[in-house]
Length: 291
Image (tube, rainbow, N blue to C red; front, side):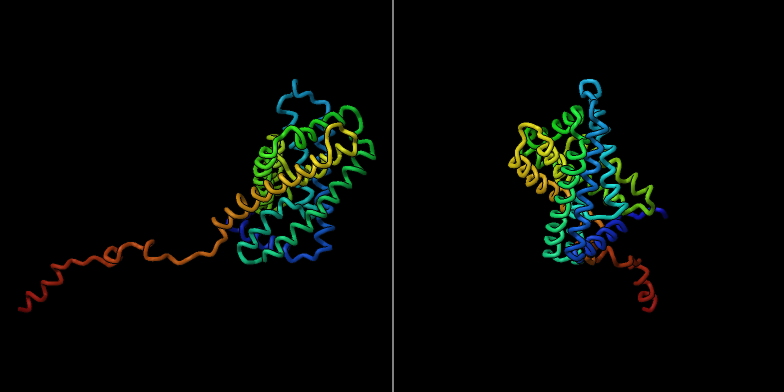
């Protein structure tokens, strides 16, 4: 078999989450730096590829193309190997629910990976996006400004939170299905469609926003301040955590990984129905004959 079944994915996910919870702090920060940078590479590519596509002409194709190429980020995270906050929001709670990781280990993992992801995303935003001039051409700057303004200004707080739930539900499904694939091609295919979907629908990913919003500030986009950026990050983090820990980690633990309990009397048929049936008249015949 070239793939894992859902129960096997749940087992693999819990084991992966347990390993993440035990990883040393320095490796979590370094691997987190790589994960943040990889997601930022996907975001940078999405800007360059979709810049110049007039929404009035292209319609939904703009975000569809952006999502398809943005998938590069999670492909690099999964195949090359790194730590991503949003994926860990599902796998480490899954391990904790199965008592393979502790709550302090869960908090420690998310905190350290958050720091690493932020550092990696900021590095790419400042050095590789702005200082290289990649997003400083008018058409690219316009696309970056549109994305950042939508996330930091246009969306309400409630919208950011709810979009973040939908985002990480899909992102963690991509990670979940990639765990089920046994080869690189299968992992890439499992990643592309959910990631394309969340970007096309305009959902909020906290690590992606760690790239888009600071890059807009570094590039001089008007109307966006650090207060707007931090507010978006807080709400996106909360929504991403709900989408991952409840809708993926929690529900798949309930379906496939929770300990099985023996069936109680309520689940069993009544005692009279469990007993083999006998022909009571036949039982009485020998006694009658004996008399």
